[in-house]
Length: 527
Image (cartoon, rainbow, N blue to C red):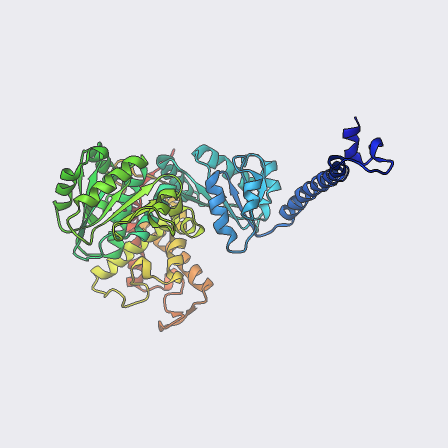
């Protein structure tokens, strides 16, 4: 009883002076000090919670990250470096872990409207939704849309991990022409990772072609095959085909399905499928695969199991017969393996720079990749590739005009013009009672009913283009120079060749959409 009273500075045995034994001397001062510390810590914890709530309540123009667990922390840390406040809404993330890297935290389910309101979604500039389940992502998007204020709607980036669901939702999003309160952008993590992988380790730069090997056709491997074809076509329009050796137990069926969904693969790449399990590749088989074509520049190892991926990569290093060949292997989880080969405290040799180990999350979990790897961006690239190909076919030289450049060299102004054109596709299709769906059957070809439909959509495109150019500060003028353009006039005043140019774009639109992985279907009507 007297021991407990020490903590309230009221213990009877120490109320009459001393002397006391040294343990009691320590206790008579240490116990009250512990009480004061505990009270101070409690008060500070309460104040910190209140301050945190106040900071979130006063935040404006911030970023909100919903779900994702460790991925949310990684993305939040990169967003925070730009100086913008970041709020994480995820029960899988502890408040202490968020605070440790300077993030604000709101406990609860992002699908709950009250939880999202406490995170200040209605005042946010950007919302990143990183759920691993596609249904959870869709529910969080709907919650954010309901809270978005007119005129102040945030830009929402939603991860859809399931490739089939992603393709279907992308088609439905493009097909909805209404002006939405939420500026929604969908992305697929594997597609982003493939784009980032090619940015970090690009394929051959030979205009006549080259040879790469892709081992493992899981979700990332399939996305990588498609992006290799896109990269080849956009970087070398009119150049030779890239030879791609694809290795997986079900390679033939997977490659055939991808070529049906993305017909441009046949023009950009020659894909040789080998139905071999990745773990069954020994040095002898790898040597044969690497020698079956021109000089091999890259071997991309995309196996789902990290141990198998590293095993294949090390075997490929022993089998390589060209000094310039690089072996690139990705690992699913964190960057521990990557740091072991490439960090300052690395443990293993990277074979004189010929081995590159990349972590999947490190590839795509950055604001720049998410903002630049959207389905709108993909369609915009396809639209520009079609335009560039048509101009080159008409005899114009690459680079003769600012718009006649590959996408990677295109000025931002013209990239945004292609994005605006992509966003307008749904409105054009709705005008002729058509919808966009993921490509599933190339035999179901689309045809316009008559030339009148083509001319109507061509006029819509011209009016969209005029609005866009006038908004950018262009001025109508008979002479084309700088910000002056002779075609900034009503459709009725356009010259015949200019009208035909817009009409030809409309005729080519179904094939452009097919290259982006979509096809057009006409909706049956009652009349």
